[in-house]
Image 1 (cartoon, rainbow, N blue to C red):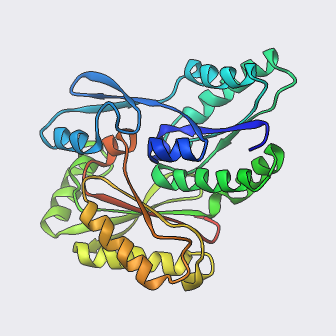
Image 2 (image 1 turned 135 degrees about the vertical axis):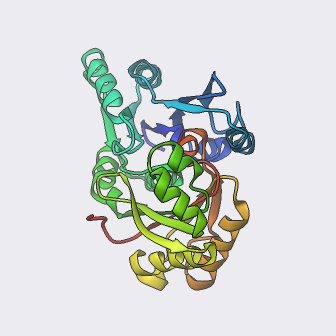
Length: 295
């Protein structure tokens, strides 16, 4: 495994068991639900199903990023053990956590001048961020050293694609991402917006598609267009969802039907509390490796 630690934030939306199996450390975001603060600890404090049902019932949510102090605690426990660190943060396009990690890194470098502390802005989110971490763990386990792995992450992170759709605009409206007028019209016309994460790590609306059936077909078509080697794509594919497992299963089945050379089955994870507090229920996200994101 080498003499370094691979770590990230809980917003990579993998399971605790998966992080432990792959020997990836993580630091937790925080969120409020109904006025009470919790750790975004992969559903241990508040399971995803409970989170979304309470949101539907009207309880307000609010999220807060990982603090400089949280990062210092994570980094220093490993530095004291003589380990170097490669930490990957949630996209700077949706959170300031990258800056916090860099502040912690710079402060600790003064105390541990002989240790390496690399911080990578993933420009990714949810289980797309998770797929990046999974790939980095694969490369680490193959024998790649920390310097080479850091360079690989920086050179390849924009090749990771994120495509999302939502069948419920309620929380996009509530969070100001969709105007009330547009949201009302969209709901009446049964519009399901298709979005992706751009080269700056920001979530961008791309298409307005009528009916869930059509948006499901379109999200798989985007994988056909953008995946590495097209229909011969042989990498891993992850999905995440917020209280709509049936829709996620439908997308997964279509992907597996079209992409015969996938590295294993499509893996499905729940969208965690931090990302889910902004999307609400009804969101499905598809992640795969492809051409470099440029817009």
